[in-house]
Amino acid sequence: MTDLSFATRLIRWQKQHGRHHLPWQVRDPYLVWLSEIMLQQTQVATVLDYYPRFTARFPTVAELAAAGQDEVLGLWAGLGYYSRARNLHKAARQVVETFGGVFPCEREKLETLCGVGRSTAAAIAAFAFHKREAILDGNVRRVLCRVFALDGGAADKKFEKQLWTLAESLLPERGGDMPAYTQGLMDLGATVCKRSKPLCGGCPMAGICRAKAQNLTAELPRKKSAPEVPTLPLFWLVMRRPNGAIWLEKRPPEGIWGGLYCVPCFNSPGSLYAAAAHFGLLSDGLEEQPAFTHRLTHRLLLITPFCAPVPDSLPGGLSDGLWADPHDSGCGLPKPLHDFLLSRRLGKKTARP
Image 1: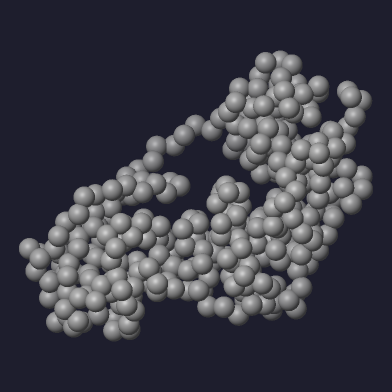
Image 2 (image 1 turned 45 degrees about the horizontal axis):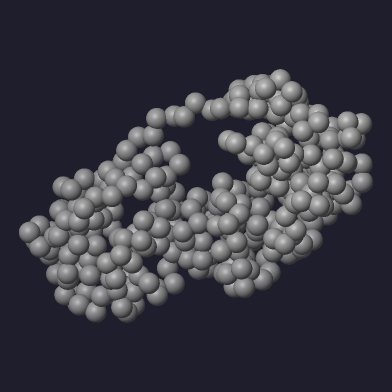
């Protein structure tokens, strides 16, 4: 088998051992694009839970484009990396307004859509249009670095260019083979050539893998140095009406939980107490809850909730938000807030102030 090309080995392996029953393994570019955005930095098992709900509500790109951002973020809530959802919504409108509701088939035009980079555009072009385009995500990078014993820094632009050149040189000749080939790269990296404890015995590249031959599998690809993650204190003011409704405010479009609904957030207890006083709440009426942490990509949040029962009307008044049943409001909530409120079983009804 040593004379077989990389592409031939991969395609044969994928057809026999790869994943074939994922709901987005279709030629509809809208469904392919949606799955590719959801799968960015997210496990397949997690996306399998969100994807059916999303496609049931927005079966076409036109229906997604016509929706309000709040509804899109509400369905996305809990999936994380919320800029993806905002870009998804913008890109859907681009497809409708710029391309007449039809996804372009060329990678270069797909890259003009919000949130779509070179590798994502290539995957859409390969799956939906059988274009000979190379992908290069984390899994593919790991496969190539090991099979060809390539060593370079993750931030090295010259090394990145070398990997792209290699990826393009390995493509199969027939466009019809591109879905199996592209899926095979994803499957191989996710299920066999894993970051730790790779299953080299079941790898179709075992006979030609230079890292395996040179006992370099554990060293390649070179691991990124883990940056120190700063801790950001955050203080929540959780105001609850007698009927259980919680006061929620829409977060700014940029920053943590952009565009989602959340209880008022503050960077210090002093700021929280000042806001509470504006609403007519006394500091001794605030019930401090145990702090808990929530990890984001580049920071660790240390969240301390302060809960306060409030009457149906507050002396200070409220604006730019809504009273909502947090479990049935249709609003997109940050996952840590959703989990916190669920643990306390807060909320019953929804009403505008």
